[in-house]
View 1: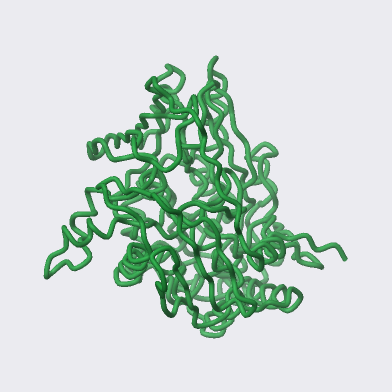
View 2: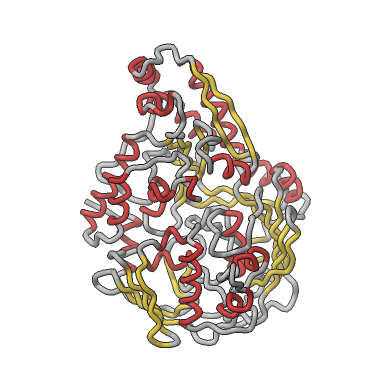
Length: 524
């Protein structure tokens, strides 16, 4: 049996010593090269240890470096602030060797104490990216250029999490902390102190963030690398497309297929398409006091969905959904079946649950500006009408959506969320279904699903070094989520975004998918 899966390949890499250095380019761009990126939402904070959504990560990846990074447009890890890494045979100890001569934007330099301070800060704030490091026990600094991570439990994928750990200046923490704010959270909300390729220029809230090339960066800028970056906020996608067609925007993140096609029809615009490790997920609110609290009703609703019609919406740029794990993450044998519409079974389940004629209304929440989420709301309304179920669709901006879903009392019956793998470990996406990730705790578990057995299983899978056993546990975890019909899993669209023809750029499939690292973009 051929079993070339992402999980296998990554585990094999992590078991070895990573010792390839990034070869710095030799030429610094003398002219100003400007890149303008448009996004529908704006980050609330510049704090890298809070960043766990596309609009915040978009900024953080430009201003901050991590110990390791993903190869642009892929999932392979490689050195960044670290020159090499080594994982012990038991996968519980991971040793990092730091790069020398790295300078932060505030003039301070990198050493192991700085790394430890960043880890301590991340864990003390305990939000967003901290959820990835719950297995971390201690951080040791035996020398100035050595950091040893010791885990509570084995984790073959731990090095793949290190790109999610932004390293901040310890000097900045010390200078801006107060008795009431020992980690300088207030200062980091509107300022930055990273070692990344770009420094913060201005932040005109609600409009744009500007970034400038860092003259002291440890890598040199190749010809065509952006030296000035503007991150625009354009909640109206139509406006962003118009600006792109006028040559005022170079790249857009997170827009729909139709809108990308519209932009790509302009003379100097092309469409970039890449695989995506994400799943279009429509959560049920399991805390709702109504029909969706019954798993039979949830299954009936899921069976009523016309998955083929939703797949066709993406014009061949999507893959069938088979569960909460995205296509390409794990190749199960035998594979999970694709979801399909079955109205007869849906009617039977509704009758069994006491709703033979439907007779209720569901609230559906989608993100304003994302055409595919609005399309699903309309499709759902059409699909449920024969069952006697009505749908009230609401579309709001991202901050309002997060706020509404963060409270079980205001959360909708169904809510659309694109879930993505955020590390090469497939459990990184399944952890969105754990109790710790509930929306009222700051996570993305908008279903308010709680399953202690699943919580325990997901806490152990990454430490299983035997491939067959690990795949079996992943299968059981996915099946338990499907059995409880926590969500409707829709066909997963590829990354398909418009870019000005003069740019060569990769979107990041494992980093919230609408993000670009501008240091690796090139203007032709």
